[in-house]
Structures are given as structure tokens and as C-alpha cells.
Amino acid sequence: MKIFLATVVAATLTAARVGNAQSAPVGGSACDYQTCALTIAPRWNGLAIVRGISGETVDNLNSFFPHDIGAALGANDGKYAGADSVAVAAQRAVQLRRIGAVFTDVGLLALLVGAVGAATSASNSHANGVLLGIGVAALGVSVPFQFAADGALSKAIWWYNLRYARSGPAQ
Image (cartoon, rainbow, N blue to C red; front, top):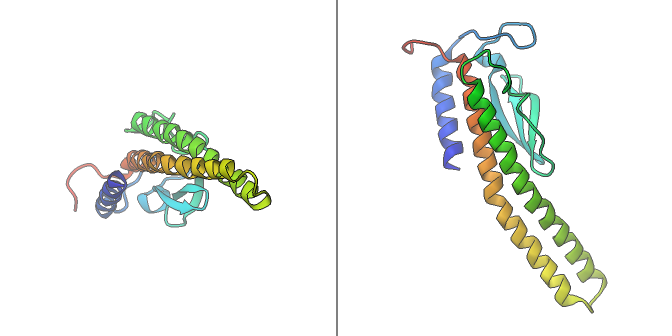
């Protein structure tokens, strides 16, 4: 959470300094911070990576079935400063999210099986209770991994947006 807040503050300060700095083309046209910088937006299934003021969704770091988001962040594009840092942070975000997703998925499955078993049969109440306990524990273990993945994604986006920073003193 601290990493996320620090990233938001840093991005806000950078945005205040950036103004109309031009950058590398995205989609064949010149971009500035307002139209092409990335941010994150919460969704029911993870954190969406959105572009510019329009909020166009670029990708999603899914909570249940995560996939590689590096391409959406231009992680393999060595044409701008910080691309290697974007790649590292994006890869770390996906690794952490995958660990969290395993615990989340197992927890939800255990809760579902335990709840259905408890609702349909009173004879296996101990087994159903154990399944419910495992589900709650797995979900609890998943939370720090999910938050750490969010922090790594914030770092990747910060590095991505660095391309829009002006060189020299702020005006």
C-alpha cells in the first residue's frame, strides 16, 4: 500500500511538471502525457491499465487468471529510457499476481465446495467446516500477494510514464 501511495504522489508531481512534453509515437501519432500516459483503474477482476484522459483500457492485471502485461506497457521496446525497468516491474507484477491468483482460486473453490456441502448434507459437517476454513485461510494468504502485485504494477506504470517527463527544471 505504501508503494502504491508513493507511486500516486510521484505520478501526480510528475504530471504537474510535465505539461505538454512530447514523446515517442503510440499508434503512429505523437503523444503527450494527457493523451498517452498510463494509470490504473480498479475493476471487479483486477486492475485495468488505462491510457490518458480518455481512459481507454489497454490491458488488465487480472486477479483470477493473470497473463503477461509487458507488451501493453512496451516492456520489450528499448527505444525509450526506463524500458528495462518497465519490463522488470511488469514481470514482477505478473509473478506476484499469479501466486495470489492460485491462493484466491483455491480459496474460492474451497469456500464453494464447503458451502455447497454444508447446505446439502449435515453428515459431513466437520469436513465442510475444514473446507470453509481452508478457503478463508487461502483468501487471507492471497491478499498480501495481490497488494504486492498492485505495487509492482504501479512501479511499472511510473517507469512507463517517465518518458513524458521534461528534461531540465520544472516551469
